[in-house]
Image (cartoon, rainbow, N blue to C red; front, top):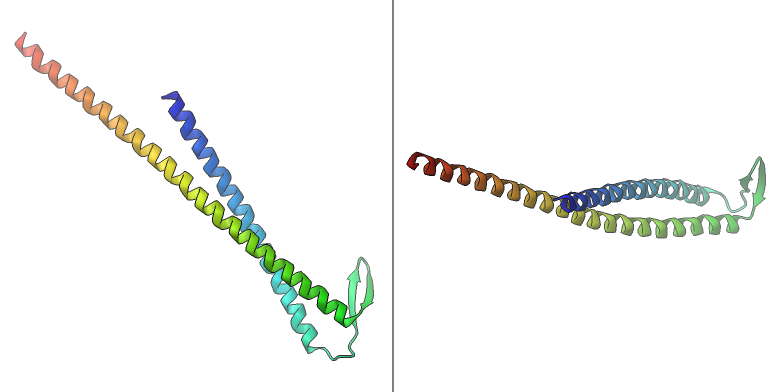
Length: 139
C-alpha cells in the first residue's frame, strides 16, 4: 500500500509539473503574440510612409537614421521569427496538454482502483461479521 501511495504521489507531482510547464508556455505564447501585434503595427506604419520618409531606430538613448529597406527587412525578419516561435510554443502546449491528460487519467484510474479496493475490503469485512453473527446464535 505504501508503494501505491508513492506511485500516486509521483503521478500527482508529474501532473503538477506539467501544469506549471503548461502555464509557462501559455505565458510565452501570449508574449510572442503581443510582439507579433506590435511588429505588425510597425509594418502597417511603414506602408503608410512616403518613399523618402526618414526612419529612425532607437539604440539606447540615441536615435539613429536607418535605411528604409533595412528597417522593413528587419521587421519582416522579426515577424517571421516570431511566427516560427509561436508555432513551436503551440506544439509544446499541445504536447504538454496531451501528456497532462494522460497523467490526469492515470491518477483518476489509480484512485478509482483504490476506491474499488476499499469497497471490496468493506464488503469482505461485512460478510465476515455476518458469518460470525450467524455462527454465534448456533453456539
